[in-house]
Length: 299
Image (cartoon, rainbow, N blue to C red; front, side, top):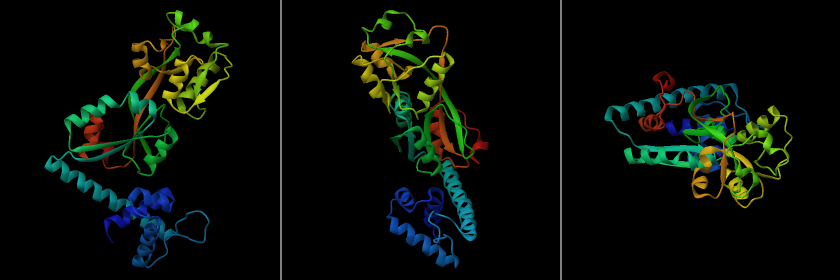
């Protein structure tokens, strides 16, 4: 058995998908199936119950998976320790993030990181929030960056920073003449919003419930850039993260108003899978983001 065999099998178990395991390892779906059968021949036992419609392990398969994870963890830990001994900061860091963070919060940190550690590659993929969690669980990425983190027993969420929600309008909109905004001002306004399953939308809906406002969005979009463009052409008003409209406010294409007497925080967090061995490059990336990662969390 080679270490790659255990990696492919572990990915297969965690994704419950031959095609997803194949994608993670850069091989064909057929190759994953062949690897699983090769392991069954090697251990002389059936590991995948093929009589079931859904992917399911046999008890022997579960035991092999548990041992595979231990072997992979030990191997990754060894590689990380050898890199630290050699003071090597290299490799690739894979990040999944939502649009608003990836486009408006992350770039200066990545720029500094690549300047300080030019031997490291950073790959950023833009995903919906629920898919970021899925990518972390399936080891498809090393880190995830999301807003309004939710607790998950297999995921470590490290607080990154707090952004705030603000009201944006067209510069000629009547509300733009006010120095700041009240939530009550939104009554009767044409409201542009994120899709209902996006965490920031859920937070905005909660604000409306607290203020007993019934708002019926005239448009719903899945990313911040489309929301901003709709407001810029005066199709309505919107509540968005403050960091995402700094450039438009500076250029005068949008009016940005804080809410009077109340700040609506939008917590951001970086995610990684619990028990994941962090390479020296990953640890340096955490440091660049300004967070402390106790060694106990790396175990």
